[in-house]
Length: 315
Length: 315
Image (cartoon, rainbow over all chains, first blue to last red; front, side):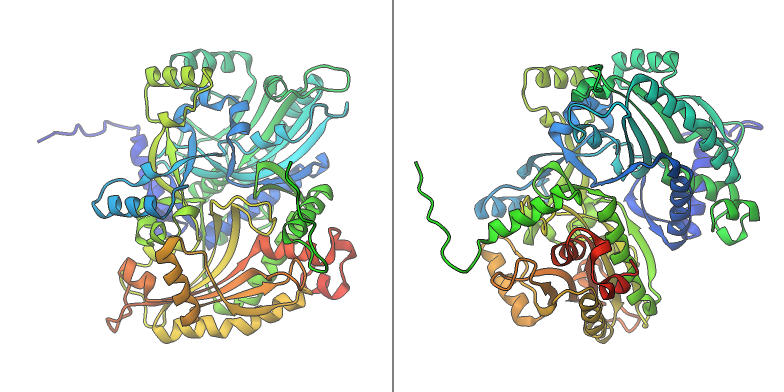
């Protein structure tokens, strides 16, 4: 028999706090458990808040005059390869396989299934990946030269990252609403830096305590530790974090502002008319994370939220 | 050298008609080619019409008082298995694989990639499938008994079917807005039959010529031919079809009304309070198909569409 030490004193256990929020969201009918950690159905009350968050985010970036693009949950292997994602985040990547066999192979598959064997081995890689970051497909679409004034995109799509978790702030399938600039180094940096104050003010208007901090992405493995250190030192990516689980635990990122410098310009062969490699930057609202942070902060009944919060969300 | 017979006389070639529509949608900036047949980015004008179609569909079913559920693009293998989809439509199914290795395995993956070898074999099945029909997850969520008055759901989510095609009416990744009833045999049949006239009238109000015909789903293989014949003979599923490619070609389904009888009730162990196996039925708007049918019928500039159509769509 294992004896578990009681949690000591004042700091509540983080896993317990996550489990408590998850239970509240499930019990109060905000989310529905789909049987895999971090995979949920969303109910009407979730959708109502989610739509309000998204609409407020869009209003706040309307002055960009961005070109709207919406992407499906999968991208081609070719596009995925050019982002080099499998080098940095292999553990989050997810590939798609499909059945290409004939009637006879299908019978063999069904026989294996009947025996209780795994039948996925009868499927073959389909040259498709689940999209891990919804701005990825855009870099392959702008051609080899962007105008000197750059291109600006308003992008939403399904993202998928294979990180099963009981923390309701960490989903496997989620949506980011991204506003991407591809242009000169100055324009890219100005986009990332210029949008931060307004995004912070918007999130604060939702009644959330916000800090803006350098991001620390979970790069994989030993090489990844160097990449992660570089990312922090170069201060390329900032995250808008809020203390979902209280002041004793690390705050959770709910939005971000990311300067890619020439990463995608080089990978996708994009230049500005003066012949320089294009730079890019992206600001992104994490739609599910903001929505769930709101339920965590204000409770599961939006009609009972503070009037100022409901006004900011036009709820 | 191959000599191609010229297409004879009055009937235009169907593939040519499909290619012409696809080119028009791409050239006029409605869709964006993502490099895999049937996988597109959607632009602002597409999204504007798509949102209007969806909103009109929702308004037309508002009297159902349905419970809202939204689902992610993946479902658990467990839920997928219970629908028996792999038996009927293996060629449309798509499974998800992920990387579970360590730093050393990752180096081996990257070395294989460097050599130009396929690296997907380093990934393992993740017990997740891309959802082929967005109502599937709901049957696992209602417990073993539904009330005598039944349950009614309003469901949207990403669907994926692995059928690459240059026909813009046939996408790999798409959305259906489904209205599902789970209850007595009488309620399920009444739902399917009772909704058909209103759906037909709605689609006709969009300026589309509509026929309602028995569905003929592409069941796989030799056993599938029997299933397909049964489906037509039993008249369980009807489709709302419109002649996207003119009167000389088969019309294309853009919505459906489907009586499952006890298929899902038996598979998921759902009963009504009187102890009978629950029946289910589903009516579904094919959101991308209706949207593209509208562009095909009225042109790629919604501001120039007939006033009656714009009014019906509240555009």
